[in-house]
Amino acid sequence: MRSRILVLGFFLLILTNSLVFAVKEDISLEKIIIVPKPSEFKVDLWFDKKEGATYKPGEDFTVFVKPSHSSYIYVFDITPDGEVRLLFPNKYESNNFVSANTIKRIPDPQSQYSLKVSGKPGKEIVQVIAVKSKLRLVPIPLIEEIPILSREPLKFFTDVIKKQLLEDWTSATSYFYVGIVPTQGTVVLESEPRGAYVYVDGRYRGTTPLRITLDSGDHFAVFYLEGYEPIVRDFEVKSNRVTTVEAIFEKPKRTGRITIRSEPLGAQVYVNGVYRGTTPLEITLEEGEYELRVVHPDYVEEYKLNFGISQGSNVVYTFPFYQKKQKLGTLEIYSNPLGAKVFLNGKYYGDTPLTVQINEGEYELVLIKEGYRAYVTQIEVDANIRQVVSVNLTRIE
Image (cartoon, rainbow, N blue to C red; front, side, top):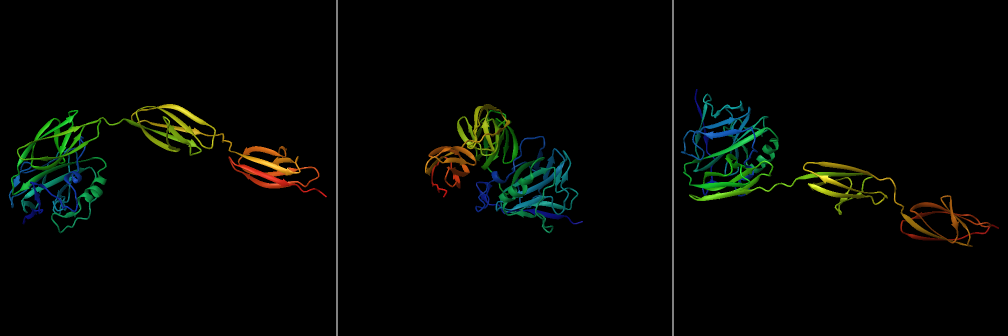
């Protein structure tokens, strides 16, 4: 049976021996290489030559992948002109499930194809993703041996790949050169505190302090230390020079939450005397002791208490308000002749001339005086408003 040859040629652009992407994308390796967090789930990636080795055009090329857990394997190549290509699975090897601690060789020795290096001199970047559940990729053209999945790598890895990597996944990245021998420099990776896990260009390198040799050009490192936020550092390696990259971890703020509710809604919330909003309200606070004050503009009750916040806590308070505030308006009532009895909603308040403070609202006003017709009208009392009512009574003939 005739063996097929798949040519690896991705038209590289070279700038100081490092990978260059299309300017219109304005992207970097840091933005598209997927860096895993340290875990027991790992995947190893290597070639038939050591990392960073030089291949001659036409030379055979083999990829090796070894996941620590049984998983589905995806091997991507990201070209300098912004193309994302899928090396595995492919037209000739569609089954990409690999058992735990099994070395997967690409191409498989039993398969009827081979990979050969081609293209312009430059640097090739290969990234493998191992995941417990299959990824949903765009339809792959079967007529293409090495299909192009996207010409927008940042959008592809952000919108298509990263959104699917919620749990049970890991990744690794490596590279090789075509037709050139790169210069190298030394990198010293340090952290404070020490002992941080370090990934350089998406590949795990060890824990700090760490001294490694890298090819000249631009790189990035991700430092992980338990209990701290990860730190990303971009750096440039120069030929035969020593570059020091340092990450200083700052203890993250320990915070908790307080949730304040009220019945009815709309109560005003003050924490340590500072207004924070109205209920319902959720506030994130640093660890410590606080004073809470809750008032409602329409009710008499006022709540004050002290509370504590610890890391990860969620304190919930609900405050009921029962007694409405009296919102008073003023009525001045006059009659001609004087001495008429004044009733508001059927309640006797006194004789004219009369000044009275009552709650805001609608009232029926009745004036009664012997020998005169009763006067009846509807009035509306507004809070903090003085209202004058003057009535000429009609004598009974």
